[in-house]
Amino acid sequence: MIIEREQDVTVAALEAMQRTTDPRLREIMVSLIRHLHGFVRDVRLTEAEFREATAILAEMGRLTTDTHNEFVLMSGSLGVSSLVCLLNNGMDGNTETDQSLLGPFWRLNSPRIENGGSIVRSDTPGAPLFVSGRVVDRAGRPVAGAEVDVWHASPVGLYENQDPGQADMNLRGKLTTDADGCFSFRSVMFVGYPIPTDGVVGRLLKAQSRHPYRPAHLHALIFKPGFKTLISQVYDPADPNIESDTQFGVTRALIGKFLRHDEPHPVASDVTAPWYSLDHTYRLEAGEAVLPRPPIK
Image 1 (spheres, one colour):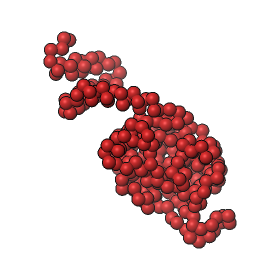
Image 2 (tube, helix red, strand yellow):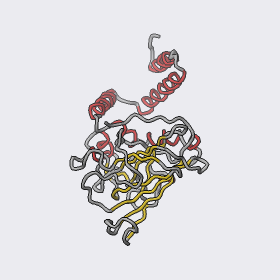
Image 3 (cartoon, rainbow, N blue to C red):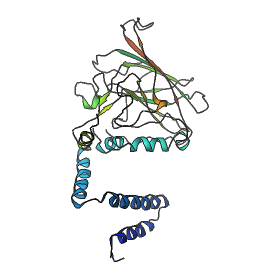
Image 4 (cartoon, one colour):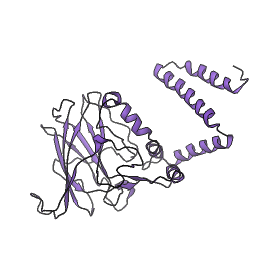
């Protein structure tokens, strides 16, 4: 097709996309062209802005390494990660769901621990935290034999891959639910933290006068054949940024009950007050058990 006016570009591109043989890819590409071309027209994108946009994408690619994923960080900062999650879970976005963002810090092959064990692997000062979890299906029946991968930031707001002072795989662990669908472990109470701001995402937040903080949260990835893999976060409602998560990830279903205790622990004699506890139930939906691609190694 010979282009005679700007509208012809969209017509030609749509005709090319329509020739895509895979039905789902065809649907996605046709919609992408319509919305992308519509966006360009809507904002009257200039040539200089287009060159800057492509340079930004190239920079994001250079910033993405084995330990940092700028694209995942950006998708969260634009609300896209949360939107995709909510659209695809909870009966296609119609009911509450325990699904949440994977985030940029999940790693494969966390060390296995027994129920009741500790995920603290190096000197990590902080108030003791005791977590008791229960995994159930949509009907509330316990799910035994589920693999539960947990991880969280340290009390200074850093994951171990960001902090050379922490041992490898510190504050990460993999457990298996018992016959009652339960698991438990010991750690240290964590805090909210700023996302990395030394790249493209940081410049965007500064331009928008947005803070970079995520409220304190515990990650879990739960895998069991016959169920959709659950990727979840449990947030501390006492965090000062619980209403303004920079990644738009806090939903009502994900707010946990972190209890502070100022009396001695009833069992652990080495624990001094204060210490914290979390008792939380995770609900799995029926579906295919597929592990996501790790954003970092």
